[in-house]
Length: 512
Ligand code: XMP
Image (cartoon, rainbow, N blue to C red; front, top):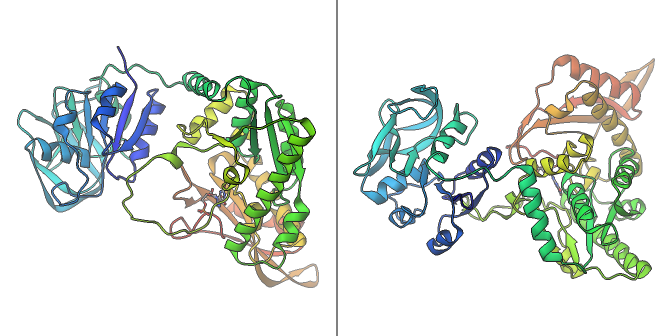
């Protein structure tokens, strides 16, 4: 009988999440736990297979993350990846040493036993390690090698590779994971209908038949899918949706989003608080102060809106639903120590404490692409599902320096022209996020026969898979030319357009 999908034990690799994502994309449930997750719990959960992730340490060093492999063997089939392979060797009597030359980047491995159905024996893979296996444990067979080291080994239901099949740079990585899956009894159990059903069952059990729910909508994909799903489950009488206009949304976005929410049948309570936000932001130039101000005003506005709903409709609200995603809840092994705060991100953080509701987080186990799949299954429009991420503090962090109504108006116009252009040319969906930034720099221009002295507008477009790292998008020069000309011709107040060619790191995606 098949079991509970795959357990991934995290030894601190930067790409552990990708293992879970690949398996889920292939249709198998998978979850990530700290490498020290108790053996008793593992046994109880009846996993189909256990995968040991990579990690930045050396297995033979004092203090390196360790768990007994002997204890795991026999519970379920095991796959080791990079550090995972080294740990299996180290714990079962093989030998791991520091490599004379680090194996980093692309390497060719040659299989003596091909994991592929077509029998291919050699392939490029992606490696990143400073240690190598010099001898495998007794009874293990080396089934792939690089020029000088074992690159894969197996024995019965244990299989390990020195490279990373989960990253896209490794060719046919999915098939290598599939080779391991073939050793297990796993059955595909993670298609969109499966996870929709499992989420619905869980939410129904948690909320019961009497209690009411509040959703804070942002116009973005996570909160929209969440509100629609909950409304379909509990009916609009029990799911109250508040959507706040902070005046920092894109051009006409408040009106457009209200329309699409209404057509989705939500019990919508829109609140236009643009004036309060703008007044509170007056005189503030510091990015962190802007973020904090928007967050504080949001909580006050939201709080007042909820009190009004409760009074007007004579209802009690029990839950606040939030679109928290899996990457925010994974208890990963930190390899960098405590990280510094680059920016204080604001969503609806702080609301639960203030409002004293129970938290409902149905998407805690989902990745963003899975939320998008749910959105599709719930028949949300492509426009809503494929919308670029948009920060909670909105355009306030895209007007550099003090935010004023005039500057916001210029930014909204320019941004709308830019985004329309991307949609017109089919570029929008190739880009993770695109937006304009109004800088506080003024420069001289010439229009007609007159001199202008107007603002410099920066245009940004990045590709990314999760926003943690990003690269600038390589437009054709004809696109840049057209974007610049449309904006400077149509937007009064902009004399010059520049394109941001900085990746993250060292920059961040937003400018503030
Ligand atoms: P940075 O600028 O830190 O942004 O590289 C990474 C991603 O996060 C978005 N972002 C935010 N999202 N609240 C949000 O919900 C925020 O306060 C916030 N600040 C940045 C940013 O747009 C990018 O997608």
